[in-house]
Amino acid sequence: MIKENKVSLWLGYFKTQEEFSDYLNISYDEDGNWIESKFQKDFSTGKYDLDGIETAWGTESCTDVQMLLEGFSGDEEIIPQFEKLIAKEELKKYNSIVLIYNYEYSGIDEKNGLKFIGTADVTLED
Image (cartoon, rainbow, N blue to C red; front, top):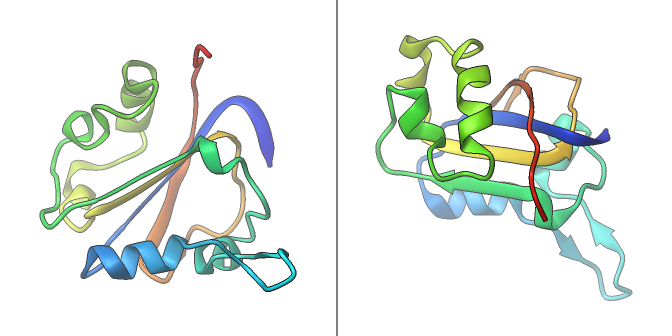
């Protein structure tokens, strides 16, 4: 659900960047109606601010939470919080990141290559 000063994190594994992009792709029908992405359907997220999502895909997995999340909005705040939620050995199996800002997710944990990690507090300046 939309909630100020929250960020929800999913990590996953996708073979190609195209596969990852297709999974997240939001489209519209001929009448301009929103068509949910596979991600939105799988996790029942509903609509969220498209400007509030950050994603990344890499060919290599990462073994350090700081390296994984460095450069994302609010990284200094969210890294320590997510370090507590992510076991280092788990990171080896992920190469894809989805962060939705001003959104607090609660629902299923894992589906189609993505795992919901948790939600952190973040203060972003406009």
